[in-house]
Amino acid sequence: MNMEEALGILKQKGYKYTKKRKDILSYFDQEDGYRSAKDLLHFMEPAYPGISFDTIYRNLHLFDELAILESTELEGEKHFRISCVGHHHHHFICKQCGITKEIDTCPMDNVKGELGGFQIEDHKFEIYGRCPSCQAS
Amino acid sequence: MNMEEALGILKQKGYKYTKKRKDILSYFDQEDGYRSAKDLLHFMEPAYPGISFDTIYRNLHLFDELAILESTELEGEKHFRISCVGHHHHHFICKQCGITKEIDTCPMDNVKGELGGFQIEDHKFEIYGRCPSCQAS
DNA sequence: CTTTAAAACGTAATCATTATTATTTACAAA
DNA sequence: TTTGTAAATAATAATGATTACGTTTTAAAG
Image 1 (cartoon, rainbow over the protein chains, first blue to last red):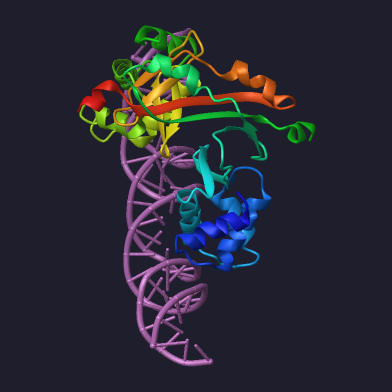
Image 2 (image 1 turned 180 degrees about the vertical axis):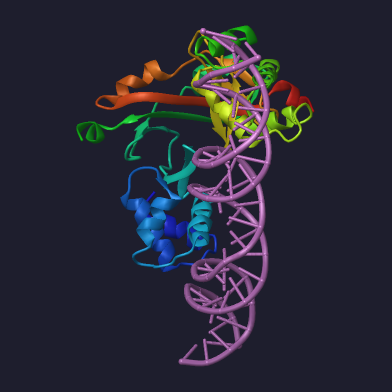
C-alpha cells in the first residue's frame, strides 16, 4: 500500500481529502513498523500545534477500517502500520523500535485438523524480539 | 496446574495464604478459559462486598508472574486463565465465552529460517472463533 | 502471645481511548 | 465564484482499565 492507493480508497469511498490525512498517511508510508497513536501525535504536533486526540484516533480507526492501515495490540496500546495488502502474512515485530519483518509462514493449514467443530474466525501470529540494528546498538 | 500446585508455589515463595487468594485460584481452577479482572471481581463480590481493585489486580499480576496464571490481551482488556504448565502450547479462544482449546501445533520451528539475524524473544499464536457450544446457542 | 512483613482497604491518580457539541472546512452544484 | 451541506476538526469532558499510595489489618513464624 502506498499513498496514491490510500488516497484513492479515500476518494472512492467519498471521504474528504485533508492535509492532515495526507500527512498521517505519509507518516505511515515512511515508517516501516507498528506505531502508536502517541507516536503519530508527536509526528503531527510540529506542523499542527494543538491537534486534537480526536483527529488522531478517528483517522486511525477510519484507515484501519478501510484496510489502509493494519493494527495490533502491543502492551495495552493499539499500534498501526501501513497495510501490506495482496497476500496473507504475519510479522516479526521489534520490541525496541517497532519495525516489522514479514513472515510468509502461516500455521493455520496445519492447525485446522485439531479444531473440528470449532468455527475459526480469525487468528494472530506474531513474533517479538530485536531486529538486527537494535541488537547492534 | 491445579489448586494444590498453585498454593504450593505461593508457600514456597513466601507469600501468604489468604482466603481471598484461595478463592481467586478456585475461580480460575473451575473456569477453563480466559477471564478478565472484571469477571473475577464479579465472582468475588458476593463473598467479599466492597473488595478493592487493588486486591484483584495485584493478585492477578502476582499469579501471572509466578506462572500460576497465563495472560493475553483481548480487545483492550487483559484476560487470565489457569496456566497449562508442562508443555509449550497455544490456544483457540472462543470470542463469545472465552473458553479455550489447546493447540499443539507451534509454528516457530518452520519460521526460524526466515528470521536470520533477528533475535527471537517471544511469540504469540492465537486462534479466535466460536466453540461448538456457542455455535449451538 | 507477640512481632513483623505482607496483604488488603479506601481512595485517588494515570493512561489510553471514546463521546459530545460547536465550529470550521472540503467539495460539488448553482 | 459563491454558496450549501455534509464531513472533519477542535476543545473539552467522560469513560474504562489499570496502577499507586498511605493506612490498617492479618497470616504466620518465633
